[in-house]
Length: 46
Image (cartoon, rainbow, N blue to C red):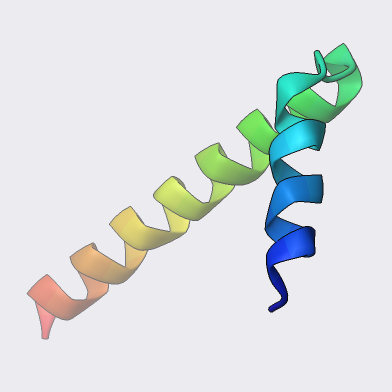
């Protein structure tokens, strides 16, 4: 990944994100955490 892409990403992060994007990110993180917990339970049961 070229450096200018990192700079672009940094600039994008500096800008305030629209609320809808923040909500989507939050929901995605929650979903991943739930899946991880379920995987952990499954592994524990074996």
